[in-house]
Image (cartoon, rainbow, N blue to C red; front, side, top):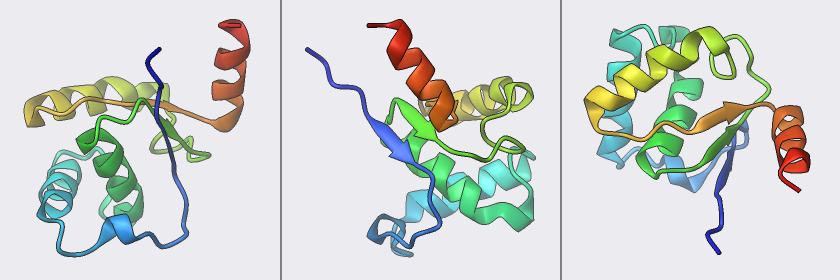
Length: 104
């Protein structure tokens, strides 16, 4: 059985976002340069970069303006494809619970 992974978008500081991780700076810069995220929302770009880089299955967030947004989905997939990254399913907690209930 394959276990799916979930990344929780949170404002709680995390050791995963250590400044020494160069991938973060490069991916976040590409997201901002390509208007995936506004410059003012670097934190959201970091969450997406982490989940994409590590191949996380789901990015769980309440941010429906810039992350869990159907209009942004294709744009994120295109940019991640150019970077050679996977794109997580970006969902709200309610979406994930609904999806899990449907598969049972």
